[in-house]
Image (cartoon, rainbow, N blue to C red; front, side, top):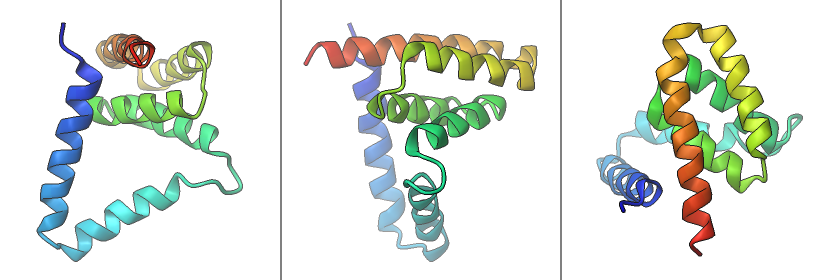
Length: 118
């Protein structure tokens, strides 16, 4: 059985390295801004990850949803919290978000399975 979590992370890391190797100042600044935006601040990391997840779902960016699901898992966010956040995303985004909601639930299950394997 394929490990979609490992495949996603390997591909993301490989392509990010390739993109950053171009040494494009604008792209590097965007990557840096993204990293810094999700650091602890007035809002804790958990809240920021849930905000990122909701925004990514509404914008229908499956790669972004996967990224924020895994970051949320690593921050200790529960499946129930994820489900509630995705409910808000579906409410705000409308029925067009439902396919992304399905993939988000599938990926969360894959994260749990991936992490239970050690």
